[in-house]
Image 1 (cartoon, rainbow, N blue to C red):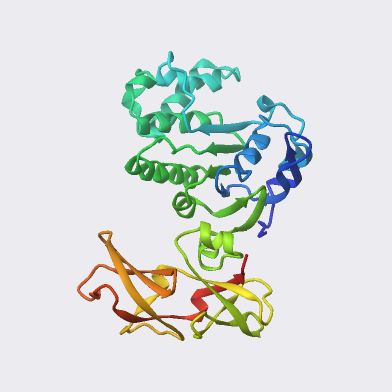
Image 2: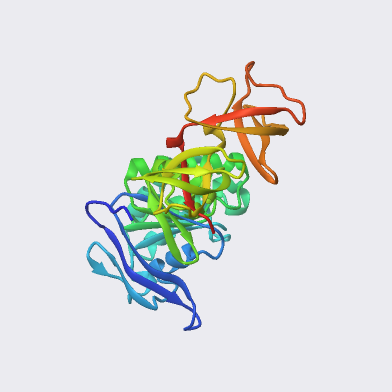
Length: 364
C-alpha cells in the first residue's frame, strides 16, 4: 500500500473477529498523514465500517494496534480519543435547537459560556446557517441537518473526524452539495478525515487516497486516479467505475506487457497488472470510454470485430452494446454529438483501443 511520508494515524496488523473463528478484518496495516482525506470503500460486509468502529472505540481490537500521533489508542475508551464522528442518521438531539446541538460538545468539555457562544456563531457561519440557530432539527431539510451534524463533529477541534456513510440518506442533488461542503471545509480547516462509503463516485471525487476493501482485506490503497487507471486486480477494476471483461489466454509475455488471444483468434495487448504466465487463462479489462468505434481519429493498437446489439441514450453520452463473442457483451461510451454513429441490430463494427488503456488479470 502507498504510505504518506509522515504517519499521523497508524494501523498495525489490526484484526477483528466476533466468533473467534472467522476474521472480519484481516491483518490491516495502513499509515495516514495529518490532514489527509482517506476513504474506506467496499461492498457491504467487506470490513470497512468495522475498521472505523475500532478506530472510534465502539468495537474492540482483537489483535494489533491503532495509534494517533505516536500514542496508542487501542485500549482507550471512545470519550478519551478526541475524535469527531458524523453518522448517516445525523444523530442530532431533537429536543435541542441547532445552537444548543453545536454547543453541547463544548459544554461537556467545560468551555466558558462566552467562548461557547462565540464558537457556535463561528461554526454556524462556516456552514452558512446563521439564521437557523434557533430552529430545531425537525424544522430543517436533510441537507441542512447533515451540515449541522458536520459542524458539531468539528466544533471541538478533534484530532480526527470519522464519517460513516454520512450522505447515504440524501438524494442525488443533496449528496453532491454535501460532497462539496465536506471537501470545502476539509480544505479550509485541514483536519484529518476517515470516510466510509460504498459509493465509488463519492470516493473518487472527494478523497486524497482510497482503500478498497473486500472480504476484510485491502485490495489496493492509492489515489483516485491510480485506482481508476491502474487497478491492481480484477476486483478493483470491477468495483471502481465501469469495465468490460473478456476472457482469453496469454500467448506472449514481455516485462509488464502481455499478449492475449481471444476466443475468436484475435490477439490484443495489455498491461500485465499481476504475474501472468504463458498459456495461462486470463481476463482482459478495458473501460467503456477507452473503446472507440471505427472509423475514428483516436490512436489504437488493439482491434476486435463485434456485432451491434442496442444502445442506451443517457443524455450527455450514449452507451453502445456489442457482442464480441457468443454470450460476451462489451459496452462503449460515446459522447452525444453529431458524430455519434447509427447502427441497426446485427450490424458489425470494429472496436479499437490502446493496449496501455487495458489490463490483464488471472482468470478466476
